[in-house]
Each structure stands twice: as structure tokens, then as C-alpha cells.
Length: 295
Image (cartoon, rainbow, N blue to C red; front, side, top):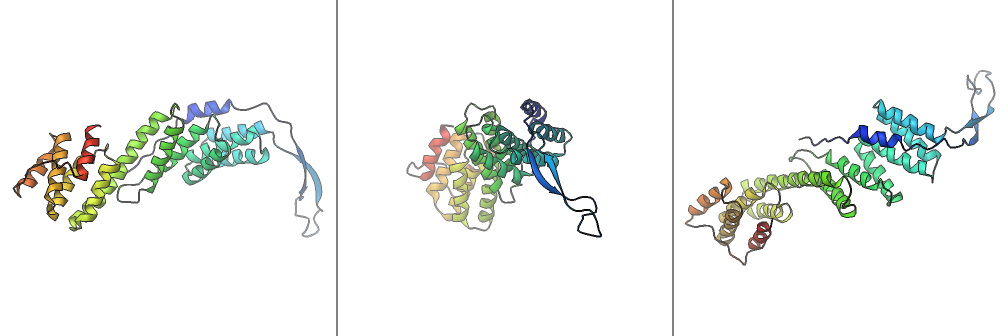
């Protein structure tokens, strides 16, 4: 299952190109330089001292932009990293790190992008670009979310970072998309819980199955998996002989999704034991049901 969503690179890069300052004065460093033939061997020339000027900051920046434009993202990241190293504690260093992050994301080198994002947030928490950095960090995890049969730690991390973005920068232009991505990530996590719950249910490990279905209702009740989770709870509790919880699960399912096929199946299942949906208000499920009614 692929979740790759690209950033609107052309517009973002156009803004990035406008960041270039006027050329900074070059700084001359004294460096040893070997002549051709590597003078240590076969009678070649000796070392000679050579003055090598730094590359101006705006030149490095524009070289990085050119590499981005040609989609040579690895080379672009190196250019922007060089900018950060050559002009530390400057605005160029901040821009270099920001653009390194962007190039790594576009490559894609998601783990590197996340590390660069963490560094940026640590160094420049109040920067105007910090919401973008949070967004790219979240997207770096989001784009690695696998199918539900595999570990979902990437979905969990994406959800966490997007939530931080929304909490800290509620007016950011990235909030709307982050909310959407959070919905997708929650659905994925709920699907994983359902998959594991069904696994336990099929093996008659009812307590373990119930715990998974409870988690879906407690953590991911706004997802499309809520209906099935309530039905599976009806099924699992009935199999254990805990009829009041089975009836409560079915009743909550009927209150919220009266036209659902899952509800019709729950009614039919209870009927085989001479039971009908009924909500017992002292049940944990009854408390969850009230939050469902509010959605």
C-alpha cells in the first residue's frame, strides 16, 4: 500500500531561490596542495603552498538550487551541507540546513531528512520555516507507511509529528494536509489492530482479540473500522458467554449505524442464543458508546 505524496516542489523552490543574499566576501585559507604526480613518489615535485579562497555563500546556494532543478538531489544535499559547514552561525547555515532537508526528502532519503529536521528544530525552533520542517518530518514517516500486515511504527511517528505541527502551529498552511494525513494514519493503525484482533479471534483467544477491538474504539473510533470492531466484540463476548457485553456492543452498533450490515449480522448472531441488543449502562462499552454518539 503506497502513501507517497510529493511536496509541491516547483513553488517551494521558486521561493527558495529568492532567499539568496548578495555575495559574501571570500575568506582565504592557507592549504597544502599536492602537485601532479604526488611528489612523494618517483622524483615528482615537492609540496607547494597555495591560497585557496572560499566559494562565496550565494554561489554555493545557487549551485545547490541548480542541482535540485536537475533532480540531482544527492549532489544538491552535499552543496547545501557545504554551505552550512563553510558559514556556521550565519543565516546561510540555517538556509543550508533547510535546503539539505528538502533535497534529502526529494531524493528520497527519508531517514536523513528526519535527522536534518530534528537538527533544524533544535537549532531554529522559532524560525518561520519550522512548520514546514515539521511537515516534511511527518511526511518522511508517512511515505514509509507499509501495508497493514507489517509493523506500523512509521504511521505512529507520522501521527505524532503531524499532531505536534497542528498543536504548535494551528494557523500554518500545512495544517489542513496534516489533518488529512493523520486521518489516513489513524485508519491504517486501526486496520492493523483489526487484523491482529481477527487473528486472535480465529484462534479462539478471545481476551486478546477483545483487547484489540477495544483499542480500535478507544483510540481510532473516527475511522471506518468502528462498525466491524463493535460486531467483533459482540462475537467475541458471546463466544465467552459474557452476554451483557455482547448485547451492549450490538446495541451501540445499532444506535450509531442502524443501517449497517454489521448491525444486521450482530442481531442475527445474538438471536441464535435467544438474545437481542441491549445496552447495559454499567458497561465500559456504554461509556465508549456515549463518545461515539458525540461524533
